[in-house]
Image (tube, rainbow, N blue to C red; front, side):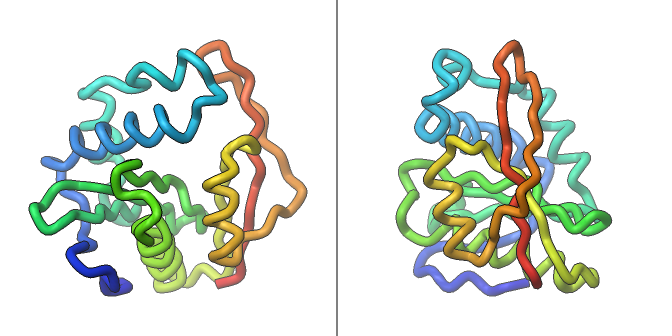
Length: 166
C-alpha cells in the first residue's frame, strides 16, 4: 500500500468502528459536490445500519481504506474491488478538500488493484461531477465511451466509465 505522503494524514485499512465516520464523510461530500441532485443530496442517503453493512461488505478481498487526520478523525475513504478491477468509491470531507487527500486515496486504491494483478482499473462517476472528473483525469483515468444510466431514488443519473492502465 502507498504510504501517506501528506503531513498529518494517515492512511489505514478501515475497521467496522469506522462505519459511521465513513457515512458522515460521504454525506458531507455529497452535500457539497452533488448539488446538481438537489434535495436528494441534502439529506443522508444511507442509514447507520446500511453503513455498517457496507463496511462489512468491503472486507477482504475487497479493499476499504480511510485517511485520518492527526486526531484520528476520518477525513476520506476509498473502496476497490480487486475481483473485477474496479475503483469503487472515493470521497473526501469538504473541509479537507484541496489538500491532496483524494489523490492519495486514489493512488492507494490503484496500488491495491495493481497488487492483486489488475492491469487496468475502471470506475464510474456522475458526468456532472466536474471536481471528481478532474481528479480522475489528473490521475490518468480516461473515458472509454461507456455510460451507465440508473435511477437513484427517482432521479435519473448518467455515469461515465473511466479507465486507467495500471
